[in-house]
Image (cartoon, rainbow over the protein chains, first blue to last red):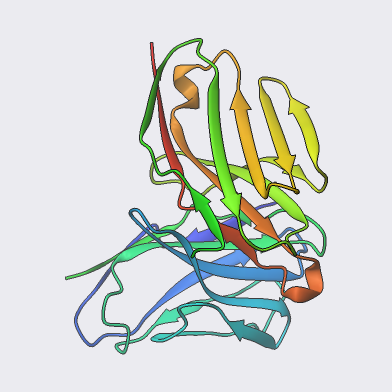
Length: 111
Length: 113
């Protein structure tokens, strides 16, 4: 079945540590997105990519980095520069003219 | 002012009630409109997708868009406990603007048996 796979489901980060969240899709979608979801704030866009080897900053890119070396993959690194990383992270993909398909999310907690 | 405003709720209704969920927006460039449903600790799933003003029906769900008033609604008829979830409106411009969707804050709905 086609879809988006995010891993891990739960992730714990120590202070000063970088962590990478995985996102893989087999839908042959061109565009991929990373959102952060906090209670009461909806979804906020971190980064997005419309094509391989190209990506753009969203509204809250500071403290995050991404890469898009393959069409299927769009990993997100939460760096130590992100001072408040505890949140639910959602990856999504879309075709050129259609709605998003979301992954099941990664819940990141700072310990 | 946020580009998209959605009443965060929570909204609690008895089983069988008609539910109305609403969003307003300020950007007249938005061309397509969506509603997503998100169960707790899950990713959102697409419910309804429309480009034009007017109504679009799918089973118990009806999406309504009024571009002149910059207002969209989702109606749920004969609501069921399984409809209990957070509902997110989303809207976007044409693809070469980045394909980005702007989401509302989400409305938490609880349908009581």
